[in-house]
Length: 421
Image 1 (cartoon, rainbow, N blue to C red):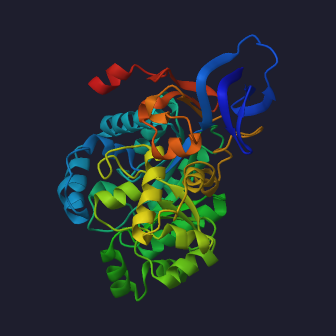
Image 2 (spheres, rainbow, N blue to C red):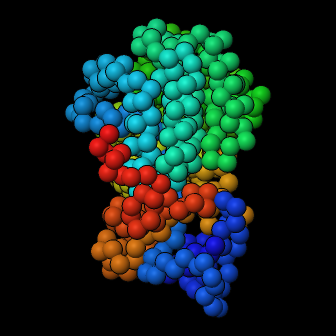
C-alpha cells in the first residue's frame, strides 16, 4: 500500500509529489509519484508527519479527569488519586486505558508509555492494559511500576522479590510483540526502596531495556531524599548505581546545577511533562540546560487528571513557551527543536525505531489537514503545527502500518460505545 499526501515531512524537510509505501509495519520507500497505482491511499490537501511519542502517562487516570482540578500535588494525591484509584477494578482499568489511548490517537499520539502501578499483586491488570492498547491500535511501552512505600495504597505495593519476578515475567511474555514493549519502572525515590530501585535497574540491564523512574517532581522530594538518604535525588540514584544511558528520569523539575551536569555525564534521558508540572504547580524543568549537558529528552502528558489533555503537539507548544518565559528569551527553544523532542528524540530514548518518516522506520504516521483554519495562512508549516494547530486538524493515523484513525474517527472500535461505557 502507498500513501500519497500533498506534503511529507522527511528527514530532509518537506517534500511534495511523493508516495510513502508501507511494508509489514514499516516504511518501505519514499518515491516520486509518476502515476497512480492500485491500492494507493490518496490524501489530498493533507500533510504527513511522524506520529508523536507520549513518553510518560498513567492511562487509568483519565477516568479521574476533573476530580482533582485546582489542587496541589499532595491534595491531588491524597484526596483524588489514592481514594479513587482504589475503586477501579480490572474492567475499569482496561476502560481507562482504552479511553486514554483513543484520545491520544485522535490527537496524533502513536506511541504511549503507560507507567502502570495498579498491580494487585499480579500481572493481570497490566495484561488488561496491553490488551486495550492492542484493541485500540496504539503502540505501547508498558512501564511496569515497582512500588513498596508503605504510605501508598496496598494494591500498589509488592515485595521486591515479587515485583522483580513479575516484571521479568511480563517482559518475557511480550518480548516478541510487534507493538508492545515492557520496561521496569520503580516508582520514585520516595515510592520505591533502595532495594526496589536496584532490582528495577538489574532487570533493565539483564533484559537490555530502558528504566523509568519519577525524579524530583516537587520541591518536597529533594528535601525528603536529602533527609532520608543524605543526597539529593539525582545524586542518590547515582549512588545506587542506577543512573546511566538506560535511565529515563520523569519530570526532573528540582535539580541543582551539579545534578544537571551529572545527568548529562551519565547519558541519562528525561521524560518532560510541562503541562502536568504547571497543572500541579510543581515548577519548570530546565530543559535547555539539560540538553546542553547532553541529556536526551522526550515529551509526556502525564496522567489525564494532572493535565486533562493527552496531546504531544500541545506539549511541544508548552515546552517552548515555558522556557521562553522562564528565561525571558523569545528564542529560547524553537519549533524545530520541540517537534524533534516530541517525535524522533522521544522514540530514541525509548529504544524505538520510529519518530521520523524514512525508509525502514516503523510506519507510525499522522496526516493533518492543510485546509484547517489553524494552519492558515500557509507561511511556515512546521511552526504552525507546533504553535497553532488545532486537534481537529488531525485526520488520519497509522500505527505499525495499520490505519487506526480515518477521517478523524477511530477505525478500530465504536467510539460512541466507548464513551457510553
